[in-house]
Image (tube, rainbow, N blue to C red; front, top):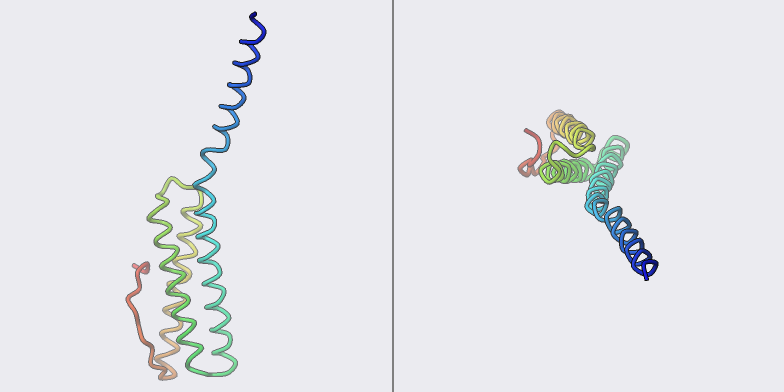
Length: 126
């Protein structure tokens, strides 16, 4: 009579252990997805910027700035969600600050080459 209870308790403990191992990892997936989305936005900004450098078409510079501003905003919103305790917080912060510096560079070039930019509010560059 003791064996069925022991088997049931062992199975229950194994199920709880398995459930406990899968529970905490689920919030990490959306964060990784958002980091990847910000990275894609930054990559597109760089592609548009290189196109601006090659072709000199003002539209590419506008697109580059818009995409970089989106990437910075994505990283900033992600940092607010994560908080300082998340391991990737400082990696995301570094990417956000790099994006802000790049936006400054694009704005200087736009001024130098007299390219009018529609400057939306930068939510993320402090």
